[in-house]
Length: 634
Image: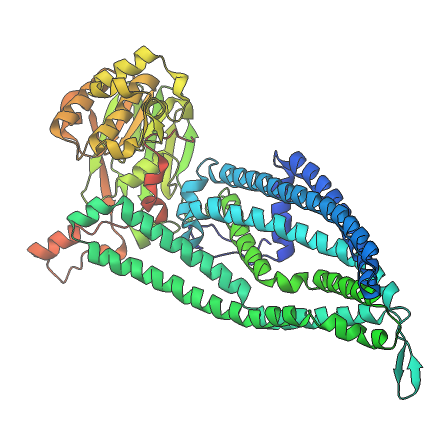
């Protein structure tokens, strides 16, 4: 297995779409997740009761099949009294089976419900372990649309697993129950051909096995493409859903840019991809229907044809014939379970593959980065932060000469608690990578960062994150809503210029839609007053805010003299209000970006060169998922 997962997701596996795991291994992964879940006891209890109900149902069906003989014999004799007596017996048997069927249906649904609960909670727990979700987002196709795998795929897998396992169990019990009945019924069949008489022990059993086996083999040949087609369909459907969701969330920007036509083409491309897979899947299912439906219609007459020689020779009464037909159908149904469920099994295997790939990718997120160079992180005293010979690479897993990047011009920096710092520099520098490096999310580079304890640091990214729920919950995030006193919360909102929101603290709404970007950032600044951390690291938070908002936020920061602040970016408001010590970032272009001495740059070309900011790796592009405040991992 080590060879199959070699390399770091997001570094060397951007184009990987799945793992090459066997079905046995995937089943082992999911069984392990189930066995360690909190719903194990409930599911095992329900499964035990289900097995008991299925056994009772199978016994009732055997009794019902035996009832065929006296019932049809009474019809053959035209015995009206016996006919009504047999109807009374049928009512009792059918009523009992009805109760068992209803109970089994309820138990099936409850088992699927708890299976889904266990699987969904396990996947969410694995996804939201420290830094995993962010790293997964930069892992190529496996990190696209995690919501699809966490919601739809987990639901489909739980429900289909429950249905298929119970269906297989029920078919197996029926097979064991009725194969003995059918063998006993066909044991005395004697065939007369051309004056010769002979018997085939249990020949109806062999006929049922041959009939079901031929259907299974033909179904396997016709429907072998369904597993891959279903996997492709789930993947394409997820990509389409993500495109639609992404367009909807960014519709204001799309409309302003007059980009509706571009988005329409993009969405139509994804729709076409889905439709192509669905068409191929429809054709494969149509071909499979020739087999399943054809054998389904033939089974109406096949058991009668098989038993006809014994009946016409006088070896069977009409009742015994119908009893044989009923037993044959039960055996055939049990044997053909795989045929009847080939399509659902294909979908189940495709869903199992997507869920196990997703879960394995999450577990892989805990592996160490496979980097040529990496920043060394050290623990320092709570009142000290150090940056020594810090160099940041623009891409993951490449030398600075190959990908470019930047360094901190001041080689040995010591910052004390309460000190105010601003870090800016060359325009071509992607300063966000320094922010991520200090947060422990971008270790690509060299040098040493000495960081205070993680609980003493807060990181404020440029894009604010407002979770769903009440405004009080948003202010307390990631702590609980009751973590801070009401008076402190109201005072923080007042100081952050959000007085109008005090009356709506406990209102549940989509605050990320109701508040503009400046107000959302102000929520984060208000929380600073509640937390009062010893250290705060900002990522260009004030840039882009309206001047009055910048002034209000800078004034708020001046009320925290005991807090060490590191502002990464260029903010005049921060400079004027806090008078920080300024550090500088110096660009280190890659060899391909170095100016050629034989060509002199002029106006337009020089401007283009200055704008050629090195593109960060996938982790850099996923920075918005970190939340509007994220405690450092240290």
